Amino acid sequence: MKWLIIFAALAPLSSMANMLNNTNDPNQPGYNPSTQRVQSEMQTQQAQQQLKLQADQQRQSQDLQRKVQEQRNSASQRILKSQPGSNTQPPVQQNSN
Image 1 (cartoon, rainbow, N blue to C red):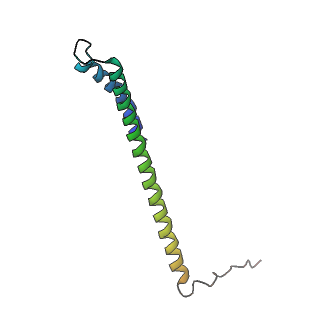
Image 2: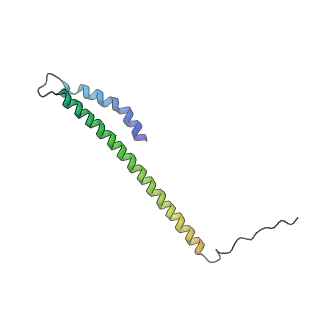
């Protein structure tokens, strides 16, 4: 989520930098506005895909950590239950009214 905010803040700067790029000069040989537009769109799409990939990787990492913790907790519970005397119920307190 943090990366998405950073990307959103930097996206306008990248388009401004693209305007300053000399390859956008129509007087330069090889200038093709549609090529520049496609290139810019591809760069934007690549940045968005990288952010999505990072978010997916972070989510997968968190899911994996959660599953490992659940397995540890489950193993701990099994060990505690297998200890001698763990099958007995705690004494029930009765009201003496």
